[in-house]
Image 1: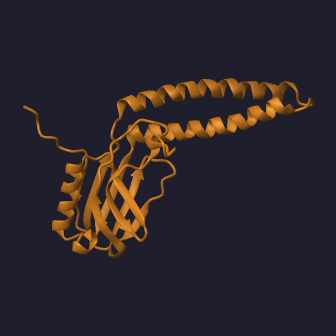
Image 2: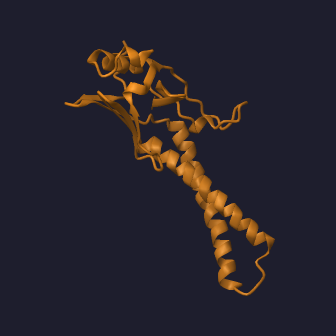
Image 3: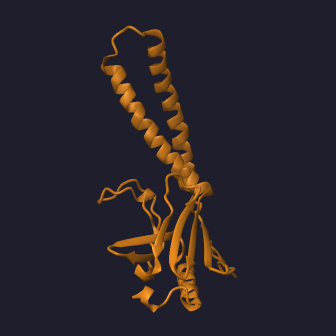
Length: 195
């Protein structure tokens, strides 16, 4: 017989509200692919970087030329892409979403996610809390040409003005419903937040 699923979130009630921690889900096949990509990225970076460095050290007075300019531009894009993939891999390895809800606001933070800015929302302006599970797909492009791998697939969503805010990435629908019900019955979210 299967053991009931415990979920991925840890919920802690504090004197001010709720503190919810959701670790990033470990997509092993994706993490393995990204790790191999980073290894190949490093080889390419080493090759292009060393050839460009060698040119600058040995040919200080010679013409720069189109080939060297192309290598520099390629290197800039290569480094940018590699850093983006490393950021994503680190998120899968050690990332955590931290959601704090009190009587006045909800804050969403992502620990160990480089370049993510913490967001704070006024609960009086938050409407239509709901659950919408979006399955994880490991594809780099679809008909809409969006990068599905890097898309925010937050299962818990709410409207804030004319924008939909998503959090609890890759959480199962049943667990997300449990969290929303708990917050609703605790009084931190009310019927206004669900309309």
